[in-house]
Image (cartoon, rainbow, N blue to C red; front, side, top):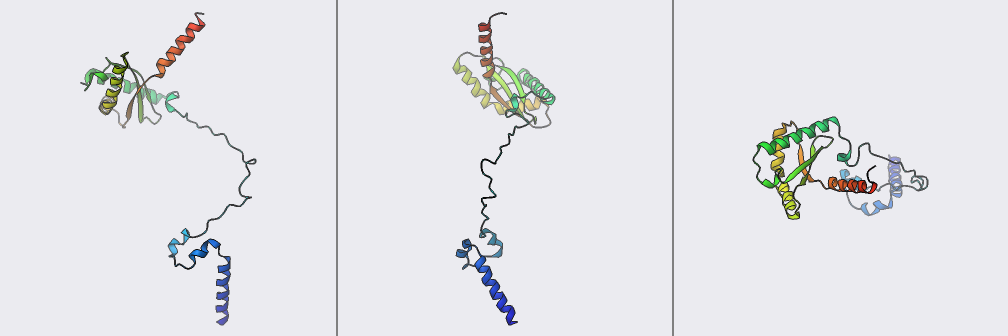
Length: 191
Protein backbone atom coordinates (compact mmCIF):
# COMPACT_ATOMS: atom_id res chain seq x y z
CA UNK A 1 0.00 0.00 0.00
CA UNK A 2 2.83 2.33 0.78
CA UNK A 3 4.31 1.72 -2.65
CA UNK A 4 1.12 2.78 -4.42
CA UNK A 5 1.02 6.03 -2.50
CA UNK A 6 4.56 6.94 -3.53
CA UNK A 7 3.74 6.08 -7.14
CA UNK A 8 0.71 8.35 -7.04
CA UNK A 9 2.79 11.16 -5.55
CA UNK A 10 5.43 10.64 -8.22
CA UNK A 11 2.71 10.64 -10.89
CA UNK A 12 1.26 13.94 -9.62
CA UNK A 13 4.72 15.51 -9.60
CA UNK A 14 5.30 14.26 -13.13
CA UNK A 15 1.99 15.75 -14.34
CA UNK A 16 2.77 19.11 -12.71
CA UNK A 17 6.11 19.26 -14.54
CA UNK A 18 4.44 18.43 -17.85
CA UNK A 19 1.82 21.15 -17.44
CA UNK A 20 1.96 24.10 -19.77
CA UNK A 21 3.10 27.43 -18.33
CA UNK A 22 -0.29 28.98 -19.23
CA UNK A 23 -1.97 26.88 -16.53
CA UNK A 24 0.37 27.97 -13.72
CA UNK A 25 -1.68 31.05 -12.86
CA UNK A 26 -4.85 28.94 -12.62
CA UNK A 27 -3.41 26.11 -10.52
CA UNK A 28 -4.28 27.82 -7.19
CA UNK A 29 -7.94 28.32 -8.08
CA UNK A 30 -10.61 25.61 -8.00
CA UNK A 31 -12.43 25.45 -11.33
CA UNK A 32 -15.51 23.28 -11.90
CA UNK A 33 -14.94 20.42 -14.31
CA UNK A 34 -17.43 21.66 -16.89
CA UNK A 35 -15.53 24.96 -17.24
CA UNK A 36 -12.03 23.52 -17.45
CA UNK A 37 -12.01 23.54 -21.25
CA UNK A 38 -11.98 27.35 -21.17
CA UNK A 39 -8.62 27.31 -19.38
CA UNK A 40 -6.82 24.66 -21.42
CA UNK A 41 -4.05 25.97 -23.64
CA UNK A 42 -4.66 26.11 -27.36
CA UNK A 43 -2.44 24.21 -29.73
CA UNK A 44 0.02 26.39 -31.57
CA UNK A 45 0.59 25.61 -35.23
CA UNK A 46 4.11 24.54 -35.92
CA UNK A 47 6.18 25.91 -38.77
CA UNK A 48 6.04 22.70 -40.80
CA UNK A 49 2.22 22.69 -40.68
CA UNK A 50 2.00 26.12 -42.31
CA UNK A 51 2.84 26.08 -45.99
CA UNK A 52 5.13 28.79 -47.30
CA UNK A 53 3.54 31.31 -49.66
CA UNK A 54 5.42 29.91 -52.67
CA UNK A 55 4.00 26.41 -52.21
CA UNK A 56 0.40 27.60 -51.73
CA UNK A 57 -1.53 27.40 -55.00
CA UNK A 58 -4.61 29.53 -55.38
CA UNK A 59 -7.62 27.93 -57.00
CA UNK A 60 -9.70 30.09 -59.31
CA UNK A 61 -13.33 29.76 -58.32
CA UNK A 62 -16.21 31.01 -60.41
CA UNK A 63 -19.80 30.82 -59.29
CA UNK A 64 -22.19 28.80 -61.40
CA UNK A 65 -24.75 31.56 -61.03
CA UNK A 66 -24.02 35.11 -62.12
CA UNK A 67 -23.29 37.69 -59.46
CA UNK A 68 -26.21 39.83 -60.57
CA UNK A 69 -29.00 37.37 -61.17
CA UNK A 70 -31.23 39.92 -62.90
CA UNK A 71 -28.66 40.30 -65.71
CA UNK A 72 -28.73 36.60 -66.62
CA UNK A 73 -31.03 35.15 -69.23
CA UNK A 74 -34.36 34.30 -67.58
CA UNK A 75 -35.66 30.77 -67.30
CA UNK A 76 -39.06 29.76 -68.60
CA UNK A 77 -40.66 29.98 -65.15
CA UNK A 78 -39.15 33.45 -64.65
CA UNK A 79 -40.58 34.62 -67.98
CA UNK A 80 -44.02 33.24 -67.14
CA UNK A 81 -44.02 34.89 -63.72
CA UNK A 82 -42.85 38.19 -65.23
CA UNK A 83 -45.62 38.18 -67.82
CA UNK A 84 -48.14 37.28 -65.13
CA UNK A 85 -47.03 40.20 -62.97
CA UNK A 86 -47.05 42.55 -65.98
CA UNK A 87 -50.65 41.52 -66.75
CA UNK A 88 -51.58 42.00 -63.09
CA UNK A 89 -50.07 45.50 -63.16
CA UNK A 90 -52.07 46.34 -66.28
CA UNK A 91 -55.22 45.08 -64.56
CA UNK A 92 -54.44 47.13 -61.44
CA UNK A 93 -54.04 50.27 -63.54
CA UNK A 94 -57.28 49.55 -65.45
CA UNK A 95 -59.56 48.48 -62.60
CA UNK A 96 -58.34 49.71 -59.21
CA UNK A 97 -58.68 53.28 -57.93
CA UNK A 98 -55.14 54.34 -57.05
CA UNK A 99 -54.41 56.78 -54.20
CA UNK A 100 -52.28 59.13 -56.30
CA UNK A 101 -52.42 60.06 -59.97
CA UNK A 102 -48.59 60.14 -59.97
CA UNK A 103 -48.42 56.33 -59.94
CA UNK A 104 -50.74 55.88 -62.93
CA UNK A 105 -49.65 55.26 -66.51
CA UNK A 106 -50.25 58.92 -67.33
CA UNK A 107 -47.07 59.79 -65.40
CA UNK A 108 -44.90 56.70 -65.87
CA UNK A 109 -44.29 53.91 -68.34
CA UNK A 110 -43.48 50.34 -67.34
CA UNK A 111 -40.45 49.12 -69.25
CA UNK A 112 -39.64 45.66 -67.95
CA UNK A 113 -40.42 43.11 -65.25
CA UNK A 114 -37.65 40.82 -64.00
CA UNK A 115 -38.12 37.98 -61.53
CA UNK A 116 -35.41 36.36 -59.38
CA UNK A 117 -34.46 32.69 -59.77
CA UNK A 118 -36.35 31.59 -56.67
CA UNK A 119 -39.48 33.48 -57.89
CA UNK A 120 -39.71 35.40 -54.60
CA UNK A 121 -38.50 38.84 -55.69
CA UNK A 122 -39.59 40.93 -58.62
CA UNK A 123 -38.17 44.16 -60.01
CA UNK A 124 -40.46 46.37 -62.07
CA UNK A 125 -38.45 48.84 -64.14
CA UNK A 126 -40.25 52.08 -64.92
CA UNK A 127 -39.50 55.49 -66.38
CA UNK A 128 -41.30 58.72 -65.48
CA UNK A 129 -42.76 60.37 -68.60
CA UNK A 130 -42.26 63.96 -67.43
CA UNK A 131 -39.23 65.93 -68.56
CA UNK A 132 -39.08 68.22 -65.53
CA UNK A 133 -36.81 67.00 -62.77
CA UNK A 134 -39.18 68.05 -59.96
CA UNK A 135 -42.10 66.11 -61.40
CA UNK A 136 -39.92 63.04 -61.94
CA UNK A 137 -38.92 63.25 -58.26
CA UNK A 138 -42.59 63.41 -57.25
CA UNK A 139 -43.27 60.24 -59.27
CA UNK A 140 -40.35 58.42 -57.59
CA UNK A 141 -41.50 59.45 -54.11
CA UNK A 142 -45.13 58.52 -54.83
CA UNK A 143 -44.08 55.04 -55.97
CA UNK A 144 -41.95 54.54 -52.86
CA UNK A 145 -44.78 55.77 -50.64
CA UNK A 146 -47.45 53.54 -52.23
CA UNK A 147 -45.24 50.52 -52.92
CA UNK A 148 -46.91 48.37 -50.24
CA UNK A 149 -50.39 49.04 -51.64
CA UNK A 150 -49.24 48.28 -55.20
CA UNK A 151 -47.51 45.13 -53.96
CA UNK A 152 -50.73 43.93 -52.33
CA UNK A 153 -52.83 44.73 -55.41
CA UNK A 154 -50.39 42.94 -57.72
CA UNK A 155 -50.48 39.82 -55.53
CA UNK A 156 -54.26 39.94 -55.51
CA UNK A 157 -54.66 40.32 -59.30
CA UNK A 158 -51.88 37.89 -60.24
CA UNK A 159 -53.47 35.23 -57.99
CA UNK A 160 -50.10 34.06 -56.71
CA UNK A 161 -49.91 31.13 -54.30
CA UNK A 162 -46.54 32.12 -52.88
CA UNK A 163 -45.79 35.59 -51.57
CA UNK A 164 -43.61 37.76 -53.77
CA UNK A 165 -41.88 41.05 -53.05
CA UNK A 166 -42.33 43.58 -55.86
CA UNK A 167 -39.89 46.47 -56.00
CA UNK A 168 -40.20 49.43 -58.37
CA UNK A 169 -36.87 50.57 -59.81
CA UNK A 170 -36.28 53.61 -61.98
CA UNK A 171 -34.66 52.45 -65.21
CA UNK A 172 -31.80 54.69 -66.25
CA UNK A 173 -29.70 52.14 -68.12
CA UNK A 174 -32.11 51.74 -71.03
CA UNK A 175 -32.04 55.44 -71.82
CA UNK A 176 -28.24 55.58 -71.55
CA UNK A 177 -27.80 52.51 -73.77
CA UNK A 178 -30.19 53.94 -76.35
CA UNK A 179 -28.19 57.18 -76.43
CA UNK A 180 -24.95 55.20 -76.92
CA UNK A 181 -26.47 53.15 -79.76
CA UNK A 182 -27.79 56.31 -81.44
CA UNK A 183 -24.36 57.93 -81.19
CA UNK A 184 -22.67 54.85 -82.66
CA UNK A 185 -25.20 54.78 -85.48
CA UNK A 186 -24.48 58.44 -86.31
CA UNK A 187 -20.71 57.85 -86.27
CA UNK A 188 -20.84 54.75 -88.45
CA UNK A 189 -23.42 56.19 -90.79
CA UNK A 190 -25.81 54.22 -92.99
CA UNK A 191 -24.19 51.15 -94.51
